[in-house]
Image 1 (cartoon, helix red, strand yellow):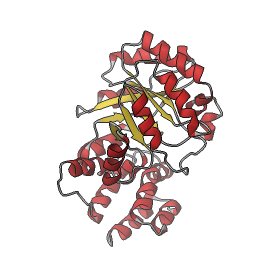
Image 2 (cartoon, helix red, strand yellow; image 1 turned 45 degrees about the horizontal axis):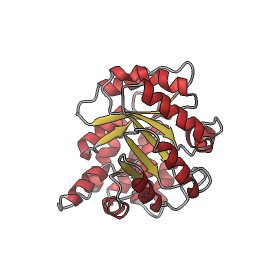
Image 3 (cartoon, helix red, strand yellow; image 1 turned 120 degrees about the vertical axis):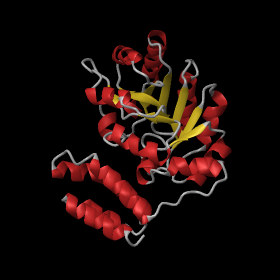
Image 4 (cartoon, helix red, strand yellow; image 1 turned 180 degrees about the vertical axis):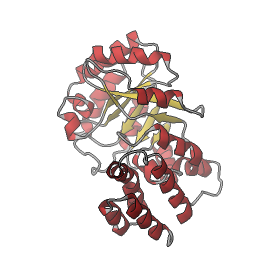
Length: 302
């Protein structure tokens, strides 16, 4: 997730209960693209030996090959190809989910990478651009290549984040492909994660937005599988999380820091307060002092 899944955020997740794999925020691939220093630092500074993949978003096969070759010298799990981003401003450029309308380009990108790069190639996509009925053609293209995994969000590109998640498509993908299939889309709890894996046959789940709102979710999933008591964070735990978020955003100007904090705390507020009152207050704060006071008042009564 752009501007959210940073090395500092992964450090927090490491401490709260890390997943089996991280995927860094996408890198836009174009003719003059290079690996930014911040991403190199994120890769090389990983303190815990948890697999991490880098995600690429672009259109031209030759640009993918050029940048992917540069990653071969770093310790990463895979090159993950973003063919599913649903944001209109991304799709207008003919990249992300828009490529589901041009499967021949996806076919060539994967083919060129598999021929040219000595790294596993995985794919992140959706069930179709307009309709989930497009999935069969998408899977036909993917099945031609030795991709290491498919991360499948159970919505169409047009469906953004409001369309109901179609988990039957996960089952279909699992039946057709030989690689691991990872389910994605509105997984809000440990119980939902285990239900999805058991009901679809998926090899795992990918969690993005809910890991921001509940950074303990991976720990909770493991506890459920191990039949342990599931950790329930207190108001103090949530406040400590907010303080850690504030610590790695404090080097910016105050307005930038407040804006960056909202990317994390608004999803958190939506998760812990169904009334929407806490979220509404967070959206209106303009200073870090007000940010801290608003959080403290809410979590003191949680």
